[in-house]
Length: 268
Image (tube, rainbow, N blue to C red; front, top):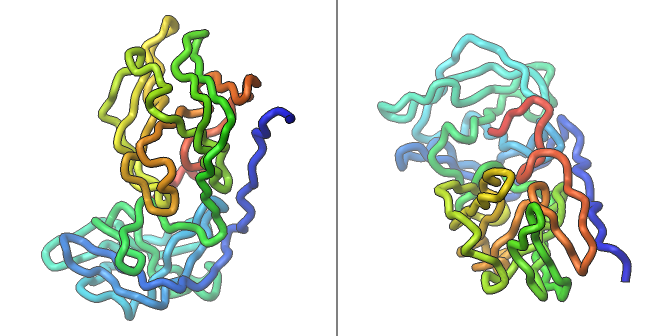
């Protein structure tokens, strides 16, 4: 048996690519429906994941206020707008695509993700950003032995794991909690969300001889049904620890953990 591969599929969708969304998509502010559409489009502003574009006619309890400002997003120029929902105003919450953007999305609205309180695909919540139709996430049980160390201190030694394969990211190794050295770890109040896995239930740090190593371990107690096999397990960031799989030390991945970094730093 060879050494565990650290290679993974790349993100290949070109910037400016547009596809139809076959799902009903809704956005809410203060419990009010901002838009309700079955005609949304995906547009890729960078290769990692798309954004929704919504026809203006599908706004329900919301109005756009022109901010008299044109900005260039990843897929082209767009005119910025604020959003009014009843008495609430969300400044700079949306953009309307202009000439120079892909033809299919011109005149549609691209909302800043964090400007809305909730997003729904059909009747289920979506977190952080739309799920890419070209991304795959698989959680597979594996008999690979996993050992995790920092500065020679063993933080975990598990005889098996669940490997989570997510397009564009390194493999993550989810371990049974019985095989993690919890007395060496410190729980933090950090939390993250993932459109494919859900909301984390905990993060932990390690205070070692070389100083603190913050938020290197996380868990999903109640993940999405698609990756239910990681429920109650915990995974370390490959980027921050020495991770041995079947006795072989894996090289640490480079780049930002979690979502791959965009060239422009934009996250919404």
